[in-house]
Amino acid sequence: MVADVGDVFKALADPTRRRILDELTERDGQTLFELCARLTMKHQLTSSRQAISQHLDLLEAAGLVEVRRQGRYKFHHLNTQPLEQILTRWIRPTAQENP
Image 1 (spheres, rainbow, N blue to C red):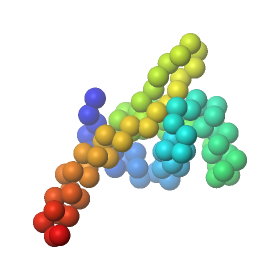
Image 2: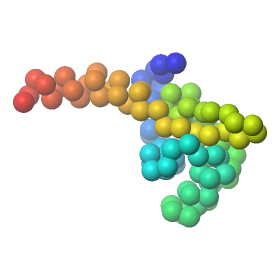
Image 3: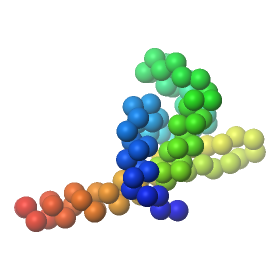
């Protein structure tokens, strides 16, 4: 699924969601519990598991996170494709025009 570019920018606008993406960049394939623990320990982020779950839902809707279910666990994976689409749409053409 390709998300609307507006959804991607909306997802990236929130600092908590950017931290979640940072954590998935550092260690891909985390459960909600793992993400909450890492956000608390590394960033002193005290959001509830429900709040982090809602952030993950928005990131998934924007196409930035993909979910893989295994038994009763959900593993969250970073998907950079929406960012690459933005890159090729606005940044790479400009870089190619101005060597």
